[in-house]
Length: 254
Image (cartoon, rainbow, N blue to C red; front, side, top):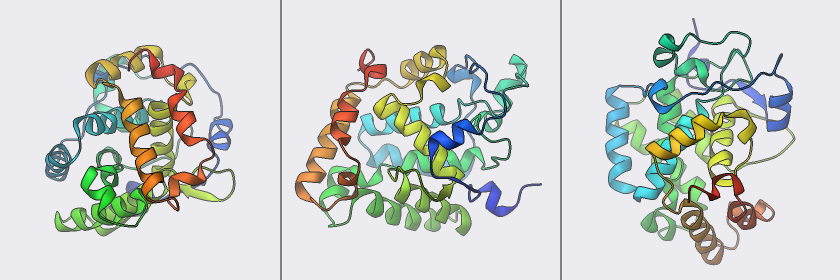
């Protein structure tokens, strides 16, 4: 049985995404999963956070958040044991990242952080603080989840992941929940690690949750924050705007 720390994604993994990928025991082709194969968690907390996110996020950001969830759950965990098609809908948790058999975070926790990770980028939240959007969004999310009676370890894990969801690097460690968000956001925002997700999955997710010019939307947010807050965390990613604008994988869907 998973511990509280494991359920909420606190297991430490390498900060380097390349190291995580290289650690797979026997890499294989990704499964051609579709949106209908990946069940969304159905809990009262999820319903409340979904309603909050729909109300407060621009529709393009909400759709991005949903794509990140589906991409983040599209890395099959057990590459040597393909899942029978009839079991896929019940194994959404088991297809969260193919890189570690020991990943245990719940699909609820993953969906919560996906829904809230860009809360700090809304027009009001971006301009109402001197804080970088990741930090402000994390504090808002932590307070929201506490108010909705999320377990404290879960709420704090979501906040930790939001703070670090643009913290790319090669040294040190991070939580497995943060790793899941890194893979999902980098695929949707920059086209990175597309080889780990089947083309069928990308087409299905983008069809269900259209991009509607997401690249331009996100670039606008980055430029606005960098202009208003030249100290912001996004400036530490060298060439970040160009990386997003150069997203060739998703260009055809924008």
